[in-house]
Length: 346
Image (cartoon, rainbow, N blue to C red; front, side, top):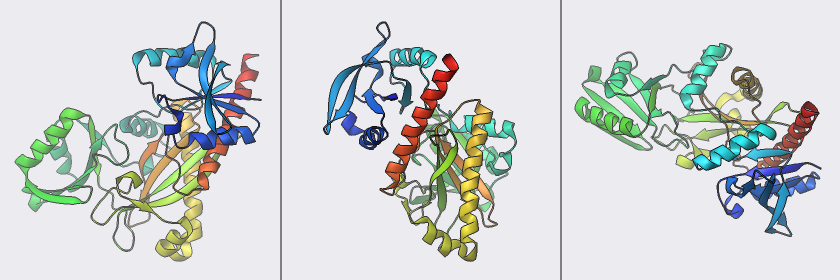
């Protein structure tokens, strides 16, 4: 039996939607999963005060250090980070952060294999850098380097040779003079680092912006598999297709048939293969063993794939039965990783 520790920063496990499915799946697989935070770790006695699901309730128990840790979030404090670093020295962790958007971009550019699919990106710190970029690209996307859920994504369009600019965020569009745009950019850049890249037109036949989320995981044999691929369609007037920012999804088969007709099957296979091959490449360029990635891509009018973003801890796919697929792959891979680590330390 494998003892799996589920590490998070929240004190109440009931606030983590997918955790119940993970615990139930672990039980069905003959493994034990318990929940804990870094503050409940005793490094001296090598024990953890954790919570385990028993008869539908979370019950506190003392556990020895687990065989493997599923880490679902970054440390919430400096002390928590130190404890987690200590745990990493002796226990395998299933997950590793990919870093910010520019880190992913630079890693893949260095790796070359997937550089062809990258959107040229530039980290910016001053409004002038954005305006300079727009002299070569009439339409650009301006977004936080550490952004998530489509928040803070702005589409900028140069009008009349740069005399005025169209600013689109969510579903709101305004037209401003250069001075006002500089003000907006300066305000955003003061808060967090941003990047700028050419706007890639990825639209449905009806004209709505869309992308594909390719959700890949490692299975119980340590191989990358495609858990789910689904389209995300932005609301009319928006460029953000993220589901938490007002976007919506559709069944993959019907969407592909509607948009690609006779090429629907080939497109599906292309997306699935692209996802698993890119994930394997991520292991190589990072020299890490990732367990799960959410890969977001768009298609331009010529059908070329463009890589929008890679997330190291993607949300559960928005189809109810896939939550169990995610949980099963997670638990089986955790058990695989624990066995692999046990062989290495013998």
